[in-house]
Length: 336
Length: 301
Image 1: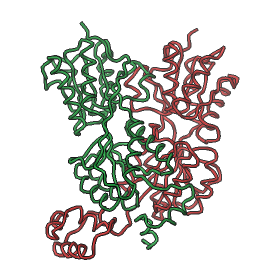
Image 2: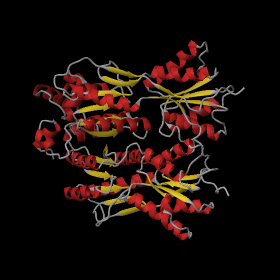
Image 3: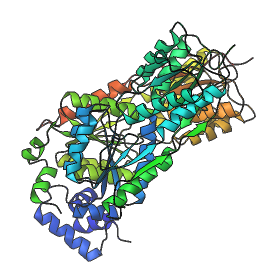
């Protein structure tokens, strides 16, 4: 098989010059271009599919905008999304808004000006809604993941967040806990609002009165989780169990538990929505309400590619996935 | 499909194309990283993003999953989509030619974590040899003589491994190849390597994990074998992790100054983007930081 090496040899130039010339990506002199083209014709050289599409300038590209790249949920899902996009013939480019609405706006426009064929977006905050309403006018196929707003015309792939909140609380109640704290996410974001609603619903269903003192706001970050846990654990009547509404806050929550010298689950039961790849590698092995992020990541990509390639169903699709309880060691009955 | 205006924008020659982007990224930095699911790279990318934004630049990221083929694809893509400069953690020595061609066309690169042969590009790296030495010296100071190492396959792992061997030699401990196992830079690879080491006739009393991802595999294996860390087996991780102080054992680590390294990479790249820059390549080596916690103890008697 003819390779780029043969072309370079025949044209008397370096491989990178051939590559650059065929990719149409830089200024190659007309004389050099002619030599390379002649060599390509003589050898009947066919560049790889990627190189061909680059030459035509039609690399198929999906953009992914996440709210926090250091959150294992996003970084793991990104791997899944990348693999699935590749399978569908698309490359994936990523931007990180770091929970900043201004950055989010900039990156949406940047993705647009870089001509992505479609976008996957996890929004940052309440005010993301206006940005997205504006963005709808671009008609770029877009699927929202993890978080959404009512009234948008984008497809979305979500966890049943309310069910996740309920599952966490139900487990604690089942173990005999009555004083259960929640480290919640930022208000105005669907995932944190619905997880909190699940928490309240589960308490109500068990006849346990809602105590606002047991709701501590984190901001989906490690430090936010730490502060919120400290707030709960230093209450005059601290909870006997608490759950974190996402994995980053769970890391902060556990650091606080460790620093206060509390033993888990003997002194305090904890659990988290979102799993970790290392959940079984350390003590306590954390009990979690996991998102099926592989299935979710694959679904997002398939929905998006269908939209891009004109195969999407009419109307707005919302795919909701059920959480999976992973019972490990961090929840035990309260001390009497 | 490609209008002349778009072509100009790709070539970065159309100031209006950029001025037309409210929110205003002056320049776009492309980050091509080996594995964004690795906390080391995601933290570094976060730091790169923050530093770039401080000077009004935007960052687009690609993750190659340690695949040479995808690295080629994404480098070409970044160039095609008109990034102004690149920060690259490479998995493929052949990228050298690509990056040289980009540089000749006015798109500079800075390498992070891993370098390319020839030293032609600015680089930001951990002193990997020093990291290997520090991990082993700590174990030796605690009284260990049989120290295992889970290494990877990339050149950086070679330097960590050489640090391991040199530290043993300085302490007069003979190098035993059966104490070194390849963890393939993955969780599962780390677990396989750990099992190999720990189920040998004369297992090590301490193990150095050559990266955070392989450390997870090592810890998984220790739990599955029912061993107690650090009472029965000590662990030092090269690379710290965000949860190191949240669980038991609190992980003893030889940390990279990840955020500082990310910031520095951006600053070096921005200096390279100044037209007419022709300074020789700068190689910044960062010193590892020992974080003494609870996963290393004296060997069992």
